[in-house]
Image (cartoon, rainbow over the protein chains, first blue to last red):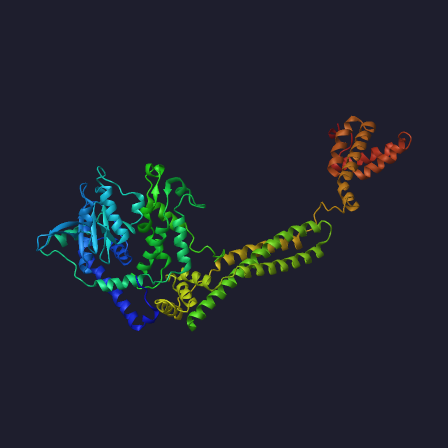
Length: 344
Length: 265
């Protein structure tokens, strides 16, 4: 991604940025008009979109995941596709394949037919049902932003974001994603069940004559511009230090980690986790109209950015320890400023 | 740096550093004062009260100076002061980020926007309650300790186990022995009285004699008379008659009766 040149930043640039941030707020309004009660999830998806990060969504069926992604695509005029993963799904079903096409002279040529992954927003439903080979095809595309078929490299469209879902209910006959692959996801977002009031609102909105839909309020170029600006957001050194200490505090082999981490964690978050924390913090600051990351930003994003990068050992799993609780304890106990003198 | 931002951060830094230096000054002064008071108490055992007090005060002054130097070493720089204010005001690290941008001359695209936001906040800052609670608590404890030490040094009387005084003074001895001595005189008088009564008077007079003696407590006169009588070889009849007459007279005064009356039997 090209950096913004300083000489190109002036009053007009600032006005444009503020307009685009306002546009982002309109996108949020459009999505919340369609989806009820998942405001935090919507905010996190927008942050991940600004960071070009892929998301792992976890929740029981019927919570509006598909509708949410479709509303996001509609509000941003993005291409959207959905892949339903099944055990018999082949890699070619995801990335595309070469098919023989007969031309006017009757000769057969192989022509690449892109798969559903060639879209801006790809919803991969129940990724844990696909075979490891199919999973790796998707994950490789996520990492490379391109796919290679018969030696020919095909770039994926930009922006490109995958929202993969895992069904926590049906674990039989599934292929859980390896931890190393899960680490490639930017966020892991848990989708909770709606409350009674939210459920009533869902019934009102969706069971009537008119089904709500999102309108386009921001185009792709504006989104790309915002993705560029995100990386320019200022990070104070002590915030970066806090993020690094937070990530190190999840690693049981480090000194001065909490006894709980040492007892229940097999391995903790790594450098990707720290990168995700800071980049997500930048995006969050931008969505709130700020141009620097704050301590609160990092603290609030700790769970979605790190929960899937921490693996519990057998003790932790058998005791029913929740990774979110461990992370919250670390966030609450980690000192913000190591060099503050006593008494102030 | 803009005027408001510069002035606000400098003022904040100055106030915080004053508090830090004061905390260290009080802490070290308290420790030195408490340790010095122990030395004072030991020095008083050898009668060096005034000199020890002077040394104590000098030690406290030196300790205070050391505390100030220590506090100076721990003082905050501008970025640490900015972090403190950001945390207190919960302004999303506005001042810390602004200092980062100013440190690189606002060379990045968004730096001016960051500094602008900090300037707006510094131009109309919310009131800050400077962290003096810890300082006040330390000062109260230290002041109490030093005051207590001073009271002990100045007002406590010399202890009884003062090593320079080995012997109880004679005045104390006399006063201590007076009471037993009085009791001895009294017991001696009783003994003489009893012996005389047994020796010189018939049994029928004894009871009256005893009652009279204890009631009037006229022992000194009787003692002198009896001693005078006893010092002669044996008991001359004239003294015997005198003593007898004396007691008869005394008994008559009590009862108004002659020795031959019913009461004397």
